[in-house]
Image 1 (cartoon, each protein chain N blue to C red):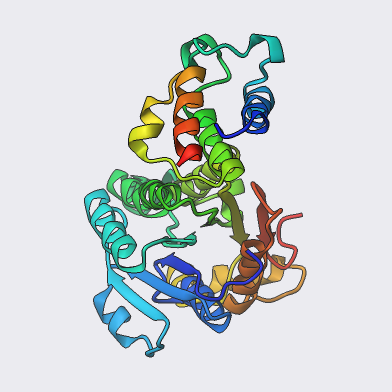
Image 2 (cartoon, one colour):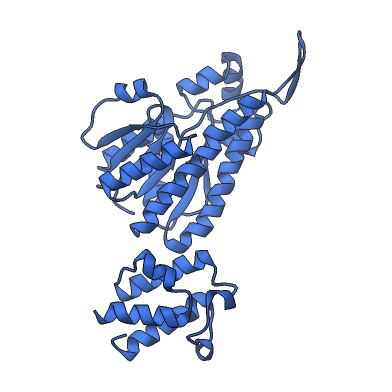
Length: 249
Length: 81
């Protein structure tokens, strides 16, 4: 897939942050980009582009995904690329001792993080791959993971979800290669996004930056550039590319 | 199949993907007989045949291609059109 011109590319959670940067880089390569996001206000606020289409869709709801992917495949007749980007950053220890005594990780929060970061990719991919197979498209699935997949203290749910996503990447790269579909993951370190700043306090963020050899947060455009190079390289499959300024070595 | 070359090409695909030896490619060999011939490799087999012969098989045809004989028959029908 050297050229992305007129390729149909879906980006989940693409209305902001890394997803939106990936969408913009795809548009710059003349791809037709479809952003799925559950936040209608965010979708409506995106600047118009003749090759940009948006669908309101909660990707944690499989029946909603199935309906949306069917609509997309009917309208565009194929799907070439899926970027499973949607995710929420969530930090909470398994157990902690505060002024109000012992606090345990909330199980509803666990389920929400797993549903958003992991199950969404499973649901979306299976319906998209069905379209690719029916249309005989040798497409690409990209999973946006995180360096937290290696296990960050204080991030049970988020780390588990991202590690699961990396496992799916390896499984799919073996299974789907048989029908010509590639799969890889991009695992960014801490990036300068609204969600990072909202999820991590300033003190922890400053401490994180001190631990990054390059002494700064990643830029979403840097993640997007790397993602596109993986999509365009037909021999790239099954790998997790870390891009974190040297944080995890 | 139009030619003996087509028949040999199909046999070559069975050899390459299902690891069958030339002498063991018989019409009655089915998915149940070969452990390597699972649902995943079946998709690979179908797509390889489509690409090699420049044909597109319907899902109805694919579901019938459960043994070597059926595959030969359906590919012959498609390539003779």
